Image (cartoon, rainbow, N blue to C red):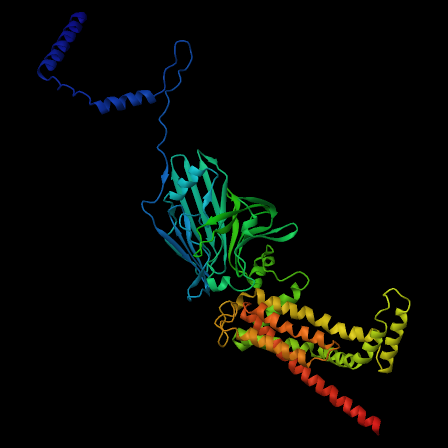
Length: 555
């Protein structure tokens, strides 16, 4: 009975299900699109595979490489950074330096002094070089992306970063500037396929843009290489460098002109590369050669770059022995540095470097006046002895130098000194010592005026620039005239023929100093005038003393 009921329930259930399928059939499923099929295939491909019958796992199929990284700007831009002392401009094409101006120094037109020599089609300072010519060209044409279009340095350091990436190539150049001063921190890096490439960064060609007036000044030299090595500061003109020269180790290396310098300071004493670069001919058609100096970079290492004036005070504050680039001299260097500081101090009171030179020259001559007084007095005494001395020398003129009779001549000369209350040894010391003591200071001040950048652009009366020649040659002519007067006033033991020869010296010096810097001629003229005044005063005092002595003897 129970089995019949179970069979009847099953039959009724099947009947109900069949009727539902007939009267309530579901709609047909839509066919999948190709994208869905591809996605399903990808899902299946990404799913873990079941183990093979042998127990080994089949390797996954290779994955597609990630898309190439690209960092570049869409157009060429000018990127600028400005602080209190410098204004720098780059092009993002190649991250190339366009301008490096010194705001505290003016050129002949009154504009900030430009340190970059623009050579059409030539190298520019801070270009990145890898040694691969094709890659270097590609980097120079690449549109780097800059961290900012303009940067104003006020109170805090600022940084400009240039980056470029395309395919497997990556390049970066970073400069960090201080708000004041002429120092920058430079980093450069180039990577290919994740590996660092050797990188070199140069400054050049040359430095600054000297005018024709500057180049014709006596003592001018074209920009040249300079570096501090184990044996001291070395200077190499561009024509002696050759295509390339490695110097190692160096504390710093760079390019200098008479008044400005660009110096690389590597993170540790290492090598530097110097090389000469041919420039387009000048207006006179003569070929020109410039110099470049660079160091190796890469990774996170950075180097310091100083581009600015050859100012001993500024450079000494920066360390790294940068002040040695100023040629103050070895044995007179301390005197030169002290006189440079004194010239600045005098200028602080006077306000004009021309009058400051005159004032400092007078001050030096006042300090040396006692020594010069003794020297002039000694010269006058020797002039009085000259006739008798000449008689003795003439008597022994034909006696050979090694003849024993020469000792008799020395005895007669000593007796002559004794009759006039003089000693031969004392007179030689009195005559030579003042000159030996005063000459280092005179030479040191001459050197001060040769290396002081303060004189560049400083005017004085009719002279527009004390670092250049006198435009009317007035100071060298007056300097020669003053020397002629000095020689006429100075007592001498020379015969008339020798005196006539000595009179040629002022003419020769005038010819030598016509194209010398006007500041040097002004100093020489002021010093000669001080000597003339002292000569006249000393001779008058000595004459008065001698007259008083004669009156006393008569009494």
